[in-house]
Length: 259
Image (cartoon, rainbow, N blue to C red; front, side, top):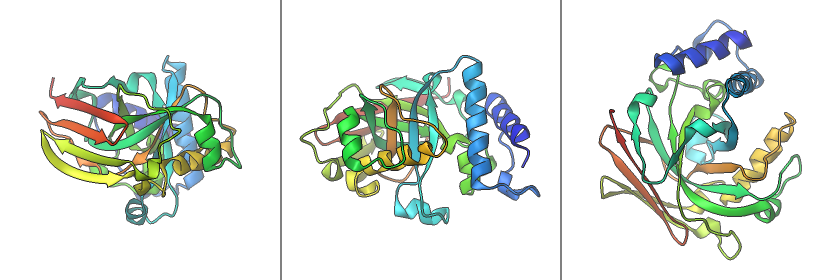
């Protein structure tokens, strides 16, 4: 696999809003390790151009999503400073190609986590607070015709994150039992509980710390860690407003337009 060629193709697709064919449909063979190298090199180029890594995202944390991609593990991507939006912000869809919304719990760390060997208890001890989040996923791959390797190479299909205003210390809350309700344009859309994410959202963060440890990468104090969607992704249309309300944790919302 020509790693640098793939990196350039993804970056140009994002800039020009013209998606590319799946890497998995090419005559070149792409492995999962190739895909992560493409992601890491892409992020490295963005950092060299001034972007700052402010967090990570975890995807494919539910059984139904793993079955869709024929895998038995989650994936991950990077969150950069220019991908963060304020709670309640109106966001232009011109920034994206074919966006969808996901609703999840974000962890903010007070100390570094470096795998392997990270446990759920380690994550809880290292967490400063949790906060509601809306992740904007997008695909630089044509028509979302992606397999696991395409998604990994494309930064876990991540494109943005809206972070809620309310911060909640993790102690005293069983995140596996936290309920969430999602509304689209004021009408009820879906609901779930925290256990939808690997039985407990902190388990997803532990998985990520251990997975990144094999690449010599840590989760750092101050970073946002998006722990994975509690429900299915929802296509975003112009004029849509989404709100996710979490028991005890507050809410997060965003509106999207064509401007």
